[in-house]
Image 1 (tube, rainbow, N blue to C red):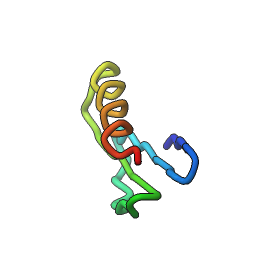
Image 2: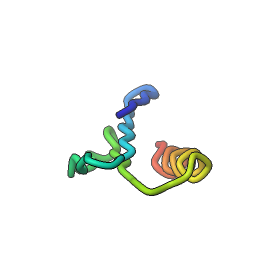
Image 3: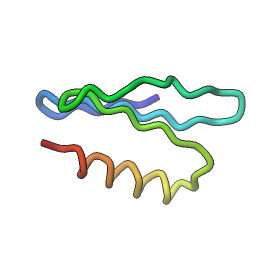
Image 4: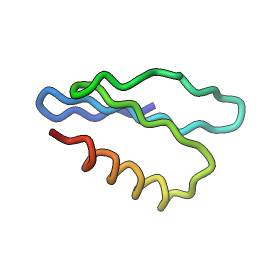
Length: 58
């Protein structure tokens, strides 16, 4: 899991691999955002994370 902060916002990124489970954490908007995915290529992850940050930035 990786995290990112910007002022009062936090993002947690969890890419699930074989043998791992989702954390099933929920967003606490507008302060904390959780991104969890699996079965993606590097480029898909990069684009998805970038778009997720842009979509949730206040």
